[in-house]
Image (cartoon, rainbow, N blue to C red):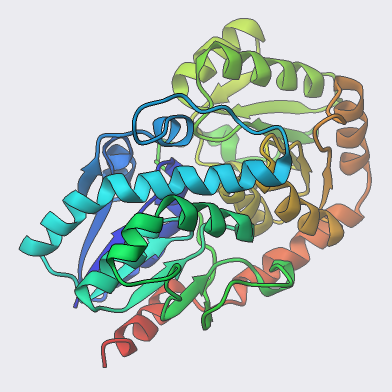
Length: 378
């Protein structure tokens, strides 16, 4: 079977799909990944074949309309979620021409798209093949779909659709106990979350628990530029005052700038799943793949989300007792330091995180889910 996987415009969207794509390839299926051009190195880094389908970046799709006019982020959180969905709609529209050309040469029997990869639904509809929607993490707010449908109204109309199609299947990597109360329509297939990342050689210290608590700080794989470095430096300095060992996971260029600003800190592009096995706490921006990797490792989290759509999934982790969330307006250095100290001192957050880790481990492995994909073409 030919299976086309379609990623979004960030490394996390690549890493989320890599376990199932790799399992399908190992099962003997012909697998191809379509992604934006700037994500292609991340795809090849996971060992999968890739074909770039747009040279546009996610930042451009988010902050420019199709005519190239600059867009401003709405102040209202719900309007911003709709705004984000529109950006993913523009990514889909830009990807469709090359996806159609790809399909003319290599027609897939099945299309698997990430949570917000709306081109997957449209392409599968045109080809009359099954479409599978694959969650990237803990799920997306419904307003994202509404924003994308509004942006793609012309494309949907030309396809004879009055809204976004319902997928034949959802592959859901969010553990059942953390799923939203009102999931989007479509049958669900649970799958175990498997951390993926670009690998670098390990160092012995990563495998050893230190004498003091080890705290990991990260802002994800997309942090960049002077503003991103400054925010990460501030966060690292806040946590540095704790009686523990600080490790910062960041892209290498950001890590180099950070070590210059915070001498003595360990910083670099670390395989987060390996690193977190010896950590006692992670402080981060609320990114879904980072949160899922921490839950997989059973590590408590201090979540300081910077984008409105991240807040509700973060609250679900907090409700389970495995995290503390500091929303916008609550993220002062003093509050971050106090919350981190509390999480390190109390045993309950680690116990709750370990329970969720066990829940993740109990889900079907990607290799088992491949057989479910095969049944869609039976």
